[in-house]
Length: 208
Image (tube, rainbow, N blue to C red; front, side, top):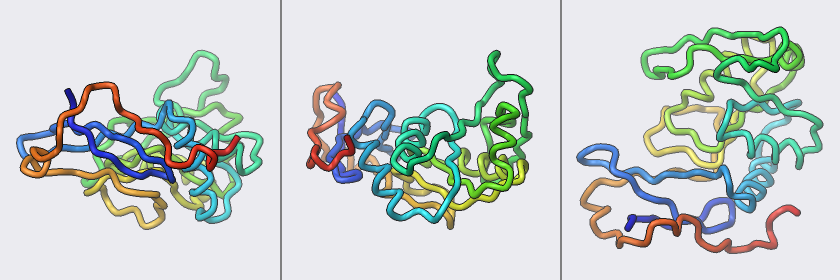
């Protein structure tokens, strides 16, 4: 059995599981990776609000579906994925050192691109995209990557941002991932594990 919270996200209702992260706090867990309707709706809604941009950049892996769908709906022919490690198929790998700071400790110290992708970003207005911003680490790292390669960050877009995440002035989010104290979670009923997704409010609103 699992405690769940129901939210409306990009025009569809979803149930998010609640997990205890310390003695006093529960967090809702949001994963859009396999949710086609939500990703399509979120992409369309974000594109209506983001500033003008030339290309989309994300970091592997969770942000890839949203970056793809936003690029498809925007009529772009490509988007760029920064890798956390070099891949065997990547010729002339470009490695960018990412510098952390006191309020944004980083898990990844380097990001990798092919030389072709690195050159493509030069001089471009780049929209940074991720499915969910928890601590701001991914956006912070991608921002440094774009700067190092001679591009310009046009803006940042995500589906949800976690409550308590560092303030990112350029970040556009469609909602917030809630955080609960133990007392408030005790009132949430238990549900069978596996009912993570509820029915969509408006399936016809999704892009075909």
